[in-house]
Length: 248
Image (cartoon, rainbow, N blue to C red; front, top):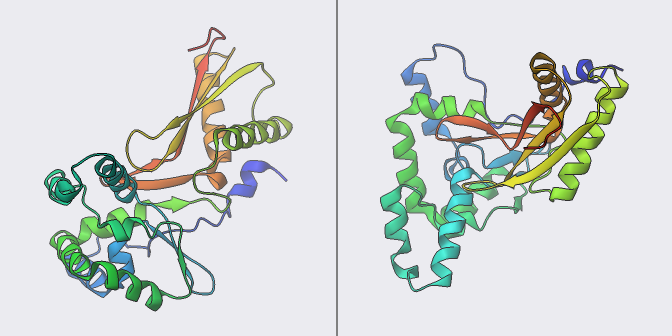
């Protein structure tokens, strides 16, 4: 089976209910107002809803960045003032919400009760913030996606092996030319969720490098995730392809 053809019916675990183009502001407000508490706390893409209704909590960029602030406070004397500082910089997420990452709940109602117990007032404030621009909130939610084979925070070794395997499959399918290449995979986690920068250097011209990059990006979709930050979806695995063999 052709690899790229096999991706066309790929089930992406969309973290958003679909929105229609031109959806009215009133409808967007109704959507946000009706959201369960756990989705408000983990907005825009901090949960995965399982086939049986279970809820798995994962990091959003905001949660991951808040975790760094809390780690900094724990190492110094700034812990009592950290909440105020985080609010000033717009990075505040309650520590109990941040600590929910990696946990699972049997249902949406249980997840909502859990977050309300630890951050009820903040969730109410957060809902009001989203309602101030409900169309933007709904749009941001629709941007995120997760490939069906994605696993959170893989090691460099695991990610490198995955990319090499995908490249081998693409080569066998005739989607990329046979060529010697140099592959470097590096962590990319300056802010938010940890991602990976994949740089392939090989002896092809510019147009061929672009085609190679597009094929590899598409083939990696099942293992990738686009997380939402500042209203833009950022793939956690970024692919660059460079011509020449002289390294970076």
